[in-house]
Image (cartoon, rainbow, N blue to C red; front, side):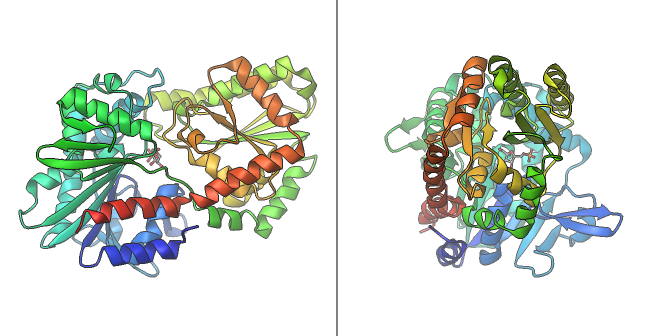
Length: 493
Ligand code: F6P
């Protein structure tokens, strides 16, 4: 197992004399006004948690969108803020956008055009020109902030994250001084669709041109790399090599590689054994809390790609088809609202509790009801207690680049008493072979899979979970970091 320390040492040695910049839309530290004064929040997403220790060791700059309502009060004239606040180790440089800019860039092109286009789950992407113009403009704001940080540096390694910033690499490369050695790398955290889906985008050429200014482009899976190469070949007529996964374009070679992201297994495993989690487990198991014999759990950002409604429909069918589980099975779903200004997300936030209520009404008996929907994010003790108590965790996205909930559940299931049901359309399915795999659109098969998961013997459950835990432990987030950084920093020499 690679440790945080190993990665920190590796990166430090490889990046000697080189400016290191991470660029993402989400920022690692958010200043927020609260009734008790300004508080600094850290987003709980795996990405910022993984990259923050790395930045703390290397001491570079993280360029990200300012999103907290007290963010502007905590930067200098160059919009920089040393972080972590109590013991600063690196610079967070904030990029400002007005509400109108955020509407077009984040809620518009990023999440109503690229997100549905790349996930391909029968939601029509919006091809509004104003969103595209806003995206270009905001990518330019990020480029300007990065340029401000690389000015005067002989060498810089810039690592972009996600689909919000497809155009920024080209903007930076085309304006870099000739003598500056730049290595640009991009990790795309969502799927890449087949070339003929991607080609629907009226600005497909511009997006690909923007991305090909990178030297290295990472995706979670080989199939996304292949889809990307095919898009480049068909849309731009570039020369691609499906064997080496390299693209030759504009006199440069661009490497396209799979790097499956993961979770911090060691930390989750430790946190899941804390006394607070044990106390919470007792509470969950008390009959007055949730009356159940079997407990299922689902944890998601509320997004139509996560298949939450389809999961509820499968639970409904399961209880209808196998009535012996009525009065015995309880499914706890925790859904954290996100992107709530986008109509599809607004509707989903209303629809989920309605569907849960409809199913609960159908089966409800006395105090028992089959679905408990918790709107919001669970605290770590409650979350890990649920992961440890669950007989089954259902992760059934309609399409997902990787899905870290599946890996988080495995890392937290320290007693090896749970089973994972996983959608065949989650990137994680490629590695997690001992999960029970479902097609979330196949209600009958899904209902049967829930029954199978609940009827698995303890011995078999243990065997499967042990094997899953070994995989996630070996391929944790530090392995992802190490693999990516090793390939990227080779390009510096
Ligand atoms: O899965 C893609 C991704 O952008 C992640 O990198 C991120 O954690 C998640 O979606 C949440 O998205 P948002 O930043 O819109 O809340």
